[in-house]
Image (cartoon, helix red, strand yellow):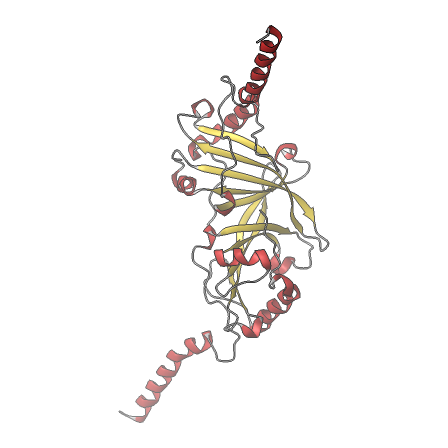
Length: 167
Length: 167
């Protein structure tokens, strides 16, 4: 093999390895990699509306629904969430209807928090991820993931969970 | 037995029978008698908000969630609802939070529609009921039940169901 061909082969191999490295660099905080399958059929905990003008509107404005898997549901009882507990925050734009009521518009994004005390120790034992509507790739930066964790830690007594179960 | 004792016994027996007669008189349109067990863990279809000032505010104002059992979920696909399909409309007052977002307040009432083409033939094959928060007795009059049916029949092509499935 000639030297320039060997170089070309090396560049190709390095390029092929890059996407994998970019997706999971050693230094990046771990977070859930996927939207949880079937969450639309989990238990709906509650909903809320963050209106225009609210400080959190840019990030979380609209109508949101919170869904819990069975393990997370158990956690609402006493604030202790077992590994494998998953909560989904499903956010929609709102839409004014012709008759003056407020309906769900298109989805904005899906936020996910997964309990795994060991794997997500750096972010309080919960792993955080956010998926833009129609996208299957988590888009959180380390800075944002740390932001999720810092805010959720203010609810330590409730297992770092903001929502409360509504019968 | 003396005549006045016999009369007293008859009055007691008649009085004891009255609540049963009042609950299900022959002439009353049939409707679902109970809040469906476990509906809070059924699939959440969508939510919406009817604000103050809306024509329907007195009856349906606030934040509502719609839940479907598995048989009703199948119906959303093609507008054909099999007997046993059940939909629940769970209505809450809204509550302004300190930070300016809108949260769920106390429950207002629970509306139920149950598909049974034969039993509820007089109301389009769907039986309608409404339970005030904390009450297990359907409170709809015949006039109101006919009102539900008349309005829902405007959605005949969608199986008389107003909501649409949101993935």
